[in-house]
Image (cartoon, rainbow, N blue to C red; front, side, top):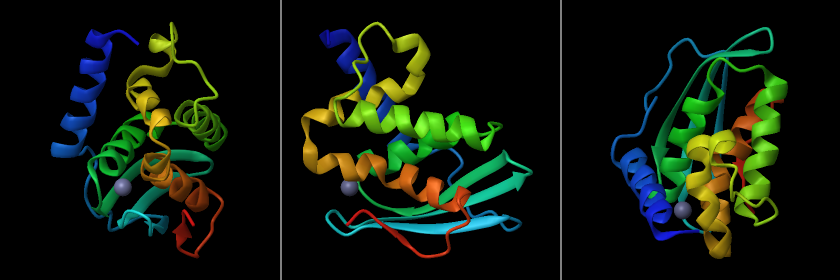
Length: 151
Ligand code: ZN
């Protein structure tokens, strides 16, 4: 990855950590689920408003490290308005990206801001931070009610 791109990706993560998007409680959520990463202490609640299988709205609340918060924020901007199946496709893509199984090179346009998390694959301890919100979202979409834990 060239250093300009790396700088851009760092800026995306810093920006979403400092000014997280959709960071609020949703009073009329149709699904709510908590996710916890005991390794780092990241803890978030995901709020979903579904109509059929479409994510009409998504918000989150909670606290954790910069990677976990930025990831939840970017995720919320990506999945809003998407169908459950599309969201699960993005989840798969994200998981492959942060575990180094998907080469983000030359796929920046397709991946958008998600590509900012490609560097996480070099830091195995941070993979759980980056993935927490996605795992929690998946649980919420599957109507799970038990807290999602990365352990
Ligand atoms: Zn973390």
